[in-house]
Image 1 (cartoon, rainbow, N blue to C red):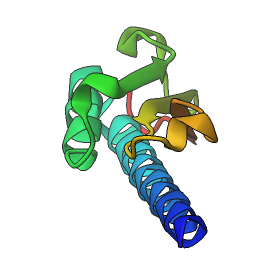
Image 2: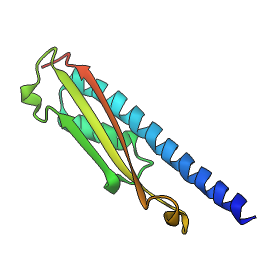
Image 3: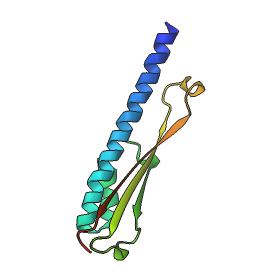
Length: 114
C-alpha cells in the first residue's frame, strides 16, 4: 500500500510539472508574438504574467533579449525566456525528488515593427 501511495504522489508531482511547463511554453510563444508586433517590453511582461496567472508570480522570471526595445529593428530577433521554480508539494517526496525543479521556456521571432 505505501508503494502505491508513493507512485501516486510522484505521478501527481509530475502532472504539476507538466502543467507548469505547458503554461510557460504557451506564455512565451504567445507573448513573443505580441513583442514582435508592438515592440513594447512592458506589454510583453504584463501579458506573460497574465498568461501564467495560475502560477505563483513570485517564482516567475521573465527575460527579454535584446533588453532595450530601442535596439531592436525590423528583422532582428526577439527572444522571450520564462523561468519558473516548482517546489515539491507533497511532504516526504523531497527524500526521493529534488526540493524544487526549474522549468524554462524560450521562444524567438523576427521583429515586424521598430
